[in-house]
Image 1 (tube, rainbow, N blue to C red):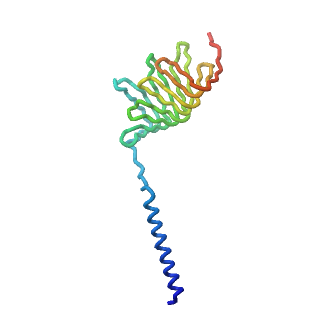
Image 2: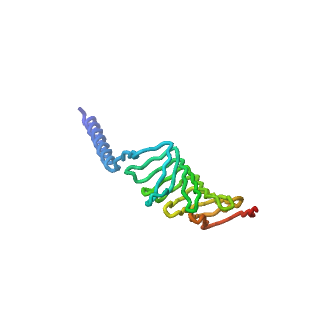
Image 3: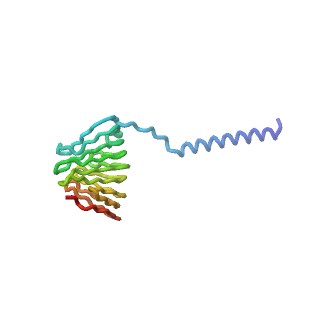
Length: 187
């Protein structure tokens, strides 16, 4: 055995040992991969009615897919269609691509392509809200949005940023950057 050959073997061995030590150190630096948690249950083609603390209907929701998150803390929904009872009769209808319902069902977050339609007024007209995100608080008959909103009522159209809705009084307020086209009332 020559000295050059022995130095080459020892150099290769040192390189392998250093590489192994670096690899083991890097493995310890990464957090362990979390195993995805499964949902408590999944419903397909469902209809669900949620009651408030007094046992009255808070809202009804229908859709193709509902998943209750681990521990029963919240609901995730795909393409839901909500119906909220109005205090003076009628119903508020809402739909979106997705939604999230809080653990106590006191908040409903409608997400992506949200549309909410109010009950008919005395004149038979309905107010319609279109936005990307809408939060509904069914226990207090309120709804709000922070982003751009389009409101139509009959032939009138309002566009603004931010929305506050008093569902029991059937009143709404656009908060910023409001522009509108008002159509005359028809007799």
